[in-house]
Every structure is written in structure tokens, then in C-alpha cells.
Amino acid sequence: MIPPASAQVFLNALGWTDVDILPVAGDASFRRYFRVVSGNRKAILMDAPPPHEDPRPFINIARHLKAQGFAAPEIFGEDLDHGLVLLEDFGDHRMREHLDDHPEDETTIYRQTIDLIKALHQKPAADVPEYDLVQYQREVNLFTEWYSPAQSLDVDKPGFVDIWQTVLQPVIAAQSTPVTVLRDYHAENIMLLDDNRLGLLDFQDALTGHAAYDLVSMLQDARRDVSDELEEEMLRYYLDDRSDAETAEFRKHYAILGAQRNTKIIGIFTRLYIRDGKNRYLDYLPRMWRLLEKDLAHPDLAPLAEWFDRNIPDNIRSKPIVGAPA
Image (cartoon, rainbow, N blue to C red; front, side, top):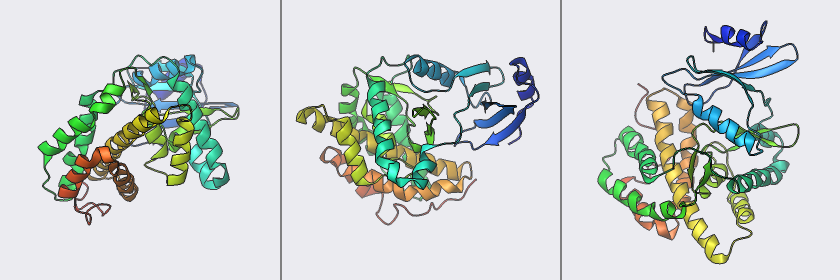
């Protein structure tokens, strides 16, 4: 975690001289983060090196969210040629760790996350690409591209594609009036700010799509256990002003998108292990399989559940990956 050589020149141009540059925990991408400290001033330096990363989507969505009244980091400066962005420091008070230490706050904070999503869904959608069928399909294909080979499974790939094409149709039809979908809206990307607002991070992959997606991301969290009881309570809270018919339809779409997201994540976490040697992501697989199987229990996902039953034996699910890191 050594800052890029161009960092100090970039900071000097923004008036941040005589600074300490300290590493901050990163994520699963090529992006790196550093805390820049100059006297009483603090900021976060994002290092999103081209060609692996492009910081422009993050910058655009951050400004869009701030303009709509949400707590996204202010952008202090950018150097797109070197992939450097200086942005507001939201501190270290993250939702995940706070709830680990204060589980009694769980319901209150999760209600805040649902309130934020409700508010976001009332605003005009961001000017970003659509979460279309091609994107949904590309993501679930990560399962057959990475997880199946890693477990030495010869699966029915054409059948997998065909079933998803059918299963996803109700979601595509329902998102004809799309909302902004942050896509990684979960406890490790939410900062608890001093003014009692929720600070948003890691939204650079935002698309426009279905309102259920970010609910799935928060309530079927890949990295934190959310009880079935809390998930149900928060779903009811989100749907409290909808008719029975609207609620049933939304819950169906929620299950479809839950299955889509969790299938994708199993593929991504396997790739992070096999390709990038990041062993810790294997620890999340039992949770991901539990969540996926819960979504597959919805009656409208019966054809997909049958595919998994035919192709992925029960004794393979949640087991360590057979393959070794490259």
C-alpha cells in the first residue's frame, strides 16, 4: 500500500502540501484508498489506476447523489489521466463494525437504510446505463464460468442460460420506469456520520433498474448475517403502503433478483479465490448458498431450482473450492 508516484504532485496542486498519506482498507477491485492528513484536515485519496479502473462513474454518481440530497463524498479534485480522486473523508464509523459492537441498534439502523432507499426511489434516476437482460445474464454466467469448473462439475450451460432468460422476464418488464440502483448497497459500504445521516460509498457501478435490487443487496448481505426475521421486517417496512397484489409481485421480483445476485456473487467470490488468490472470500460461500437456496424456494423460481438440483449436488454446495489459486 505505497501511494502512487503521482500522488504528491496531484495533492500539491490541490493545496494539500506537507501531508501524511496513510493506507485505508480496500475492496475486491484494483482500487486503493489512502487517508490524507494535513494538520486538522483529512481527505481520502482514491487510486483507481487506468486501464484497470475508471473513476469517472464514481465521480458522476457522487455528484448526482449529492445534488439529490444524499450523503455521497464531495469531490475535491481529480486527475483522470492517473486515476486519482481526492474526496471527502467520512471517517471510520462504518455500519458493519458498529452493529458488531452494538447489535441493539440493528433495527434502527436498518430502518434508516430502508428510508434512504425509499427516498432514492422517489428521485429521478441517474443518467447511467440500464440494468438490462444482457447484464443480468452476463453476471449469472460467472457461476458456470468459475464455480462449476472449480468444483469439477460438467453442468448444462445452455439450459442455465435459457432458464435465466425466462425467469428474468418479469423483472425486465417491471423496470420500465427504472430507479437508480447502487448495486453494492450493504453494511460495509455505509458510513454512520456525525449528523445521523448514512454516508454512501462504492456506488461507481450504479445502473438504472428494479427497486428490489438494492433491498436484496442490503437484506441478503454477502458479508454479514441478516436474520430471516429482520429481513422480513424490513421488507414489510418498505412495502407498507402497497396493496396485497403489488406486494406479492414485488416479493416475486425480490426473490428473482436475490437468486440472480447470489448466483453472481458465488461466481465472483470463486474468481477472487482462483484468479486473485484471495482466500477469504471462500468463507462467504456457505452464507451465499443459504441465501440462494432461500430465494430458489419461491414458486416462480421452480425451473431454476430444478436446474440447480440436477447440476449442483447438495454435498458440493458450501464446500471448499476444489481448484487452487493460479
